[in-house]
Image (cartoon, rainbow, N blue to C red):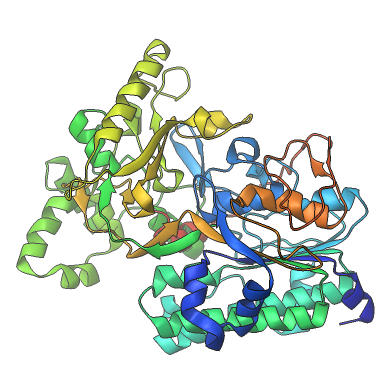
Length: 542
């Protein structure tokens, strides 16, 4: 690390995906001494996330300062009619912090920020993060090769679990990925002398999806992050440090509510079996990754064809599963029958013939199959509001088996989002009660069941500001959208007049100004391996 870089870093954002004050307190000073010290010494509080509080939509809101209705990303998927693809940076339709700073002549280093591939050109360096390809394009071009030459290795993902690794090996793999992020940032800070730095750690979220009840594994991940935070602060000596998480995580003690099953009972959803419906996320990714196939098609096996034929005459995977479960053979069957075959015999939502449906649980909402908007819409435009009101009333009235409400709120999308891309959002947005009810878009025989994941996303993360800030400032009510204007103000740069958040009182308000309209990044990307990774973490349902 050169002295110029040591003097140059003015503001550093450390992103700890999914962290909460409770999660960090449970780790304590023995596991996260550096982070605990920052929380104790800084202006610290809960950070309210957005709807939906998930990585692919929330982090773009952090680094653009605008809500999804303005930046255009509502989940892991973009939809065109009933077709879908994984989102990438070309879908984020607003200027990022580092682009705005570049216009002001300030350099940035960004490592591991989600949904930043393929990167745009700006003054500085960027290594994309989550949901990028395994070998992503970086900025400037050739940077990934440079990092691997300098550091010995740099990877976005680790597949040791897929290769039958032991739990101990998986823990070590987590730590290796975390270390790569810190090492890459410190190297790039030395090379580029940035005024602004953005360093994100994704494994703090991943570990709760994969080992939620294993304290040793969780502690290992957070300890590794703490070490990298300490090393980065020591090496770069930033003037201002903002510790941020995009959402919270916690135990789900409620129920799983299968939205499309409920809608089928009402007559809104039409089911299809033996093909059709939403595709198999994991199988598509496996075929693309293994064989380099394009698109979402693959040749079905004999077992898949047999399961598909059985489903067409009513013997679906769901019905077979109920029989197998009663016989106590489910573990044996899962080892023998391929996931693709199970999928082939599963009932799906027939989107073209349904009135309304949940297309992706991450979106937290229902889409109406509106004529003139969807390719084969069945709801006339004149009936849109009456159908939407009927759906909202029905969802508001749903009660769990325990008698409690499933939702804290059921809202029209325009009451949640604002901007030019509201049309891409679900028509009805739902807020699970206390974020303790797990929503599923899969069709099952029963409307309710136990949560598919014992831990999942919550609405509040963390905010902490330390360094040359007002550490006595009241940050109560801090919102995810406040981060971008606060970062700009810490650097003496006005916020964009399109930003939705406010400058938090830890720094002096600088004001706002109009920035040029966003023109975008127009470049195709290769998403071959991402569906399987997302399905493996439970984000995309198999």
